[in-house]
Amino acid sequence: MAFRDGPARCVRGVLHYPPDSGRRPRAEISGDHMIEEQEVLEPQGTVRITFTGSVIPHWRYEFVEGNREVIQDLVRRANTVIGLLPPGDPQFRRNQNRVQRDADREAVTIEWVGVDPPEDRSAMNQGDGPVSATAAPPRR
Image (cartoon, one colour):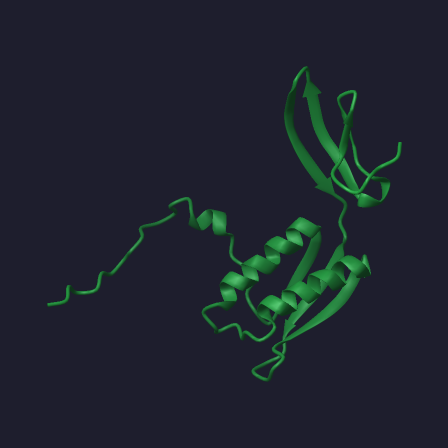
C-alpha cells in the first residue's frame, strides 16, 4: 500500500499508518461510526535537562538514549522556550509545562535535574482545595 504524506488511511475499517511513522493504531470502526481512535507512540528516547546555574545559558541538554533526530528537534524547541529563563523566573513554570507536554506528544522522556519536575496541571484544575483571591481596594 503506497502512502502519501499525511495522516493515516482507513481501509476496510482498519487504520493504516505509514511504516516509518512509529505509530500503531488503536481504533475500531463500526458501520459509519468510528469508536474513539487512540494513537500509541513507540518510546522515542530520553533527554536529560540540567540547570547549570545563574550563568546564561541556564540549561544543558544531554542525549541519554533513543532517536537522535526526534530528540534534537525537541531540544531545539525546548531551548527556544526555556533557554534564557532561570527556574525562579515567573515565566519558567509555564514554559517548563509546555516543554513537558511537547515531550509527551513526541513520546520522549525528560529527566529534569536541578529543578522540580513540572506539576500536573490537571490536578490543579479539579478544585483540590480552596482558591484564595485578594481584590485590590477600590479607587476613589
